[in-house]
Image (cartoon, rainbow over all chains, first blue to last red; front, side):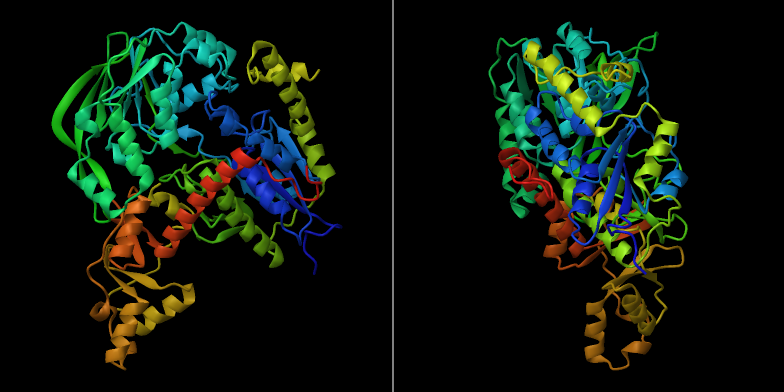
Length: 466
Length: 151
């Protein structure tokens, strides 16, 4: 019996999530020479590209240029995009099972991990993800308010997202005005009174997750000086031994850069960005109105686990830091999808090389797959999702060959589109998106910006005459 | 990158055996699951040892009656345990230096997974491949799509 994947019956695949991983899954699927594939990609937002649009910092346009590659993939015959269509709201997993042979969940890690300390919900304490989505013009976050009237802000975490947040807070208005930052965010940041931003790492400089280009960039800000504390960037004996054991050039360089920030002379720049190490917040404190006023930090020392990983251990030394704004960036986790098994402890969809597993039987569910951050957790750079998607697609191809697919009652592009039109008549197609893209870039050109984003769904629909 | 991200797409199933089971039983588990080691756990699922192909080969070279031996008699008792928050690089180096090919991972005393040296190599390869790909794209621009004429 011939399975799907022929010209007569193409393999119909639904990809949920239009971030980098969704595109990489599509790319790998289209490269399966022996399969004729039709792909419908869904996203709850009207716009594609996931975190490349809503996460990557606006002053990192070079990284955002990866979207050109995504547009090439989307131009492949057999590819369609349905923006503004949400799983669980407009379509159910059952609907997808009725129209596709295979479903891929690539929804990423949409929420942040909590610190789990008292005071975390005081006014002025936010997840970094909300701030990032806000300055990037994410429609769900555009109306959030961040009080930028305080003198000092802290960012908990030393990953690249934490660095992005700190850097955006320290950029001058002139620097930001050249980016595609959301217009309301540019306005708000222009009147920011934040003069000092403190990045807080619980481990030492050698263990920090940020990469060297990011940390080097902090030393080149137009109107903000960067500083580290000499006693915190000097390596402890364990870190030094670990670096000798694993002589990683990038880590050595990272430590060198951070150490060079310790001795910088005072400058006339109007802002200061301090990168701290070996400290963990233990409590956020506020005033009687519930507004954040300070945080209590504990100094850590490093201890080695059995595998040689250096982990922080709190000492009995504490300090108090006056802050009016705190962004936590201590990790991200996926959000469960309605009708899809979820591994709550790790914040991922339980899977075996991308095959979604039944949580009880631990056996693969027929026709359901996952890729990217919702599959393995939030690690790596954008490109890391490509081999990850490749692993998933290899399983998909193997299952097609073995005849293990879903058996949809209506496996046609027309039937799927009819269903979407019925449930979400205001969906955005790829041609629609390319039109919006053009409009955004046009608006930006006049202002000397890469683009001026549309940040409301109604605005996008109106621009399309809908 | 930590070990949790390696475990997440491995199905979280760890093949275990009791210390009183026979080597014959252990061998059929290894063959059935196509793996190189089983974690030996006590009655409350705490890891008490690991039994690898090498342990069995070593025992077989001394004793032809190896099949009937109990797992506990030849297993490796000094097991290095990992935690989901351990760094990939540290775990990889420890496995290379100590010549370990399988590392059970425990979280709050509970066995939650096992990583093999192959898993570590794969995670590192994917990471480097991803970085190289990202850089190439930024320098050279995207590949043309399948079936489309070259630019």
